[in-house]
Image (cartoon, rainbow, N blue to C red; front, top):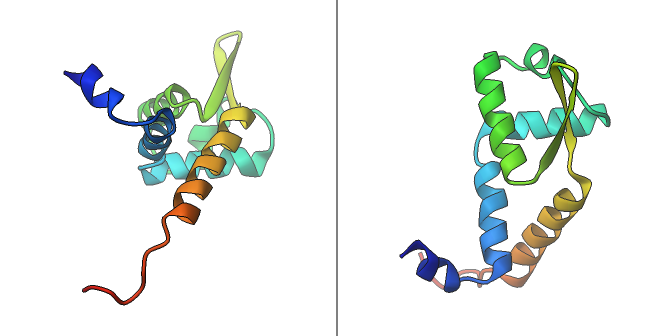
Amino acid sequence: MKEAIQNDYSKSEILLAKFAKALGHPARIAIINLLIKKKSCICGSIVDELPIAQSTVSQHLKELKSAGLIKGNTTGVSVCYCIDEKNWALAQQLFSKQFEKNQPIINICC
């Protein structure tokens, strides 16, 4: 059943929804902003920078990584995270296209 539903949507619609879901929590937005601001890979300091528990940060990092918005490299016992430049650019492009092509017609309802 799930396979049939996905066939009804374009690849770009599915990917855009995946990125949107990953960005759908304020903690994940904060993590993305932190990674962009630091402009480098961050290992253990993410927890120090945000007002949330280590386990919660780990769960949010997992979601962002699963969506492809960040990458993680293991160095010894720690994992260093940074923005996945290729997928970040793709997300920007998809969101831009979505908003550009779907301008609402003003003042026709509500």
